[in-house]
Image 1 (spheres, rainbow, N blue to C red):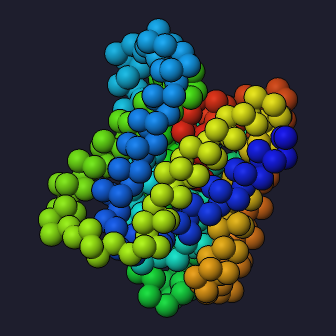
Image 2: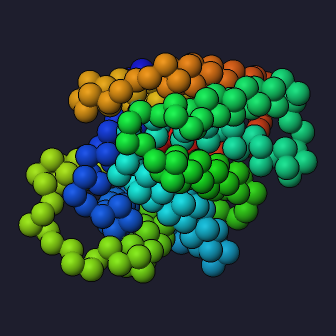
Length: 312
């Protein structure tokens, strides 16, 4: 059961990059992402209300504000920018840059003057070297713009900031309840930004391709609900160090699926950058998971969507 749940997280969250790439072929990124999380949030909230009742869903005003802040950083700044960038950037390359999120979390902790070991900082430095390999001018596949790469870097920093703050501010205590609020509030923020950017102007549903709609449905049902349910379950039944392996397995799955389904190019720089980033994230996750460490990069998964560091 543990490995079944873990492989569900590996494969589904690794495949979300491919699904996003197909979704934004014909659907507007912020509106599609916002509607995705609003639907998933409503379904999750309704289920939890049925199971827990009104009292089980009650949160304080500060907790609601915190959920709005974290949800906006993760979904608006993280997922929204990923969806925008993947209009031009291959899904595999996008997954690698977003895989640097745990590096950002450690960087924020260091800036906050947390006790971060020198070994972890070295791992972070090596990981960002891998990111540098990916973003060097002229090293990307054909058609990839510098603007798309910069959006992904901002997205990773935003997701890392949301994960970092989730352990520092007053969030709803139940991680699944917290997730439902983050989805609802973050999804609403994405819709508002999409409207402000004019994505609804001239929107013609008849131009939505069948495969984009299928990919969008996959993101809602499988990516947001099934995988997160498996993730929360496995967190309760397996060591955190084992669960955290998704952070460096997901990009490998994403690269493979992008190559297999969309024939995305795997250049030498992508191979080198991927090897460096995956190795550094694996090193940091394993190092931070060793007792007695209780660092944010490991604690964050218990607080809801913040755990899905590399899972748009």
